[in-house]
Amino acid sequence: MSYKDTFITISDDSNLSSGVVPVPRNGKPTIASIEYDLLKNAPYQYTQEEVQFKTHLIKNQIESDYLDELREQFFSKPKACFRASPLVKNYGWGIHYNEQGKIAIYEVNSKAYEDFLDQEQITKLKGMRTKRKQ
Image (cartoon, rainbow, N blue to C red; front, side, top):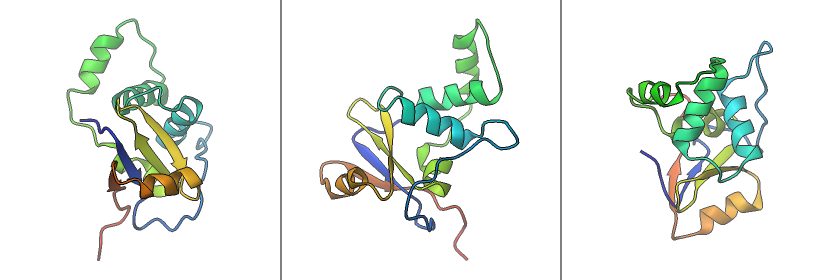
């Protein structure tokens, strides 16, 4: 399921006041660093599903002539939406879905982020919390 005309804000339990660029860990890209690179370098080029699948391929270093079959296999199990993305939970980035469902990221302290919050015609959803309420 993908959203349209929707803005996902950073998680309520995030204490970040600006966006943090995720970096690879131990020389290997993380889900957050891959998602960030894809979305920062190509805003509104990909849908949520395209980013999820590309992230899977990059993270697992998969190269194949059978991408359609791999994609079908990958999506045979439900995937969490980007409300659960580490970008909104841990790195201070909001995610906007345009009217075609293509996405881009915006830093929490940016004017564009604030502008999305002020727009009545788009749906606002909070990123999922990192920790459960006690």
